[in-house]
Amino acid sequence: MTRSALARACVCALVPISVAACSGGSAAPPEQAEVSVVLFGDAEEVAGYETLVDAFESANDDVDIALSPVATQDDLMARLTTSFAGGSPPDVFLLNFRRYGQFAAQGVIEPVQAHLDRSDVLDESDFSPAALDAFRFDGEELTCLPQNLSSLVVYYNADMFEAAGVPPPAAGWNWDDFLTAAQALTADGTYGLGVQPSLIRLAPFVWSNGGDVVDHPDRPTTLTLTGDADPAAREAVDWFLDLQLVHGVVPPDAEEQSESSEARFLRGTLGMYLSSRVAVPTLRTIDSFSWDVTPLPVAPGGEPASILHSDAYCMSADRPDHTAAWRFIEFAMGVEGQEILAESGRTVPSRLDVARSDVFTEPDQPPASSHVYLDAEPHLRATPRTAAWPRVEREANTLLEEVFYGRIDREEGLRRLDEELRPLFELTVEGR
Image (cartoon, rainbow, N blue to C red; front, side, top):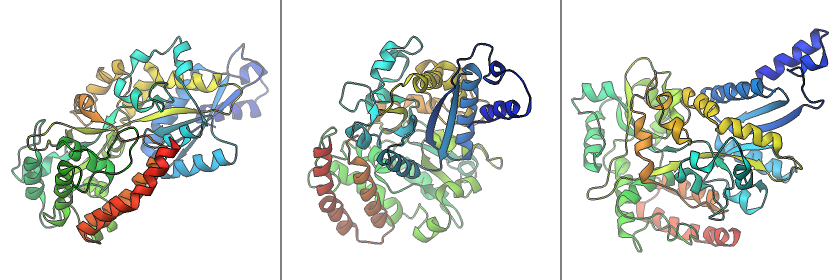
C-alpha cells in the first residue's frame, strides 16, 4: 500500500467518519479495486514511482496501488518467474524490452494493443516509434507500453577534463578522441573510464563499426563477434577489450571488485562512465564536482549508434478484468505521469511531447545536456527479444567479463562465446 492509501486507512481506523469519506470521495463505488505493481529501482528511482502512485491515487480514489519495488532487474525476473509459476503474478509489472520475450512467448502477458486502440486518453502517435517497436513481440501487436526511451551515453566529470587539459567531449567525437581522453584522465588513483563488460555495452561499438551482434535480428542462430563471419564486429570487440587489456584506462579486476565504477564516478576518481538515464537520480547526489552527458564516440569512418534502453508497463494475462490496471497505465503514460518521472531524473519520456518539453530538456538539475538522449533516437538499435535472449545475454556477459579482465585468454574466450552459446540460440528459435 502506498503512502496516500495508508494515510486513508489510518484515518478510517481512528476516526468515526462515513464510509464514503473513507473511500476518498462522496460517491466512491462500494468496492475498492487494488492493483499490484512490481518494478525495479534503487531508492532514488523508487521515490519517483511513489510520487507517481500518490498522484494517481489522488485522482482515482476508487483504486489502491500496491507498489512492490525490488532492487535490480535480476531480482525482478526472479520475482516474476516465481509468481507466474505459482499462479499469483502482479497485475502490472515494469520490464525491459530485452527481458519480456520469455513471458510473451508463454502467453502470460495481456497485450496492450487493444486497450490502447480503445483509449480516449492515449494514442499510439504520442510515443516514440523506436520504443514501441521494441515491444511488438510478434512484430505487429503491441505487447507492453514503453514508458521510457533511454540510450547508452557517456557521463563525464567536467572538472577532471579541465584539470587534465582535455577539451570536453562533444557530438561527433570518435574512438581515437575517446581513448586519448581516457588515457589523459588515467593517473595515480584515477581512471579514465568505467564500463561494464557486457553485450549491451559492447553492441553500440559493434554497430557503429558496421558490424552486428547476431546473424539475424528477429531469429538469431548465433553471435557474430568472433570475426569469422563479421570482421567489422571482431574489430570492435578487440577495440573494446583493449581498453582494459592493452591501454589500462579501465579499473582492473581487483579494483572493480572492491569499488564499482559508479561509486568511483560519484567519488570523483573516474573521468567517464558509460550508463543509461537510469544513473541520473544517483548522480544528482554529487555536489563536489560538475558533470554532464555526451554521446557515445563513433567508429572511425563509421556511423553514430547506441542501444535502446526501454522499460514498459506490462499486464498479466490471467485476469478477469484489466480495467483498473489499464487506468493506472493510462495515468502513468499520460502527460502528468510522464512529467513526474521526468522530474525525478529516472526516465527519458517515451511520450514525445513530454520528452521535447522544458520539463525534460531544461532541468534545474544536471545533466544540462539532456538533449543528448533525444538526439540519439535516430541511431538507436535493439537486441533480439526472443524467449531465450535473457539467458543468451547472461551467459555471454559472464564470458565477456572473463576475457575483459584477463582471466581467460582472448581467443579462447571468444571461441567459447561462439561454441557454448549456439545451443541456447536453438532454444531461442523454438521458443519464438
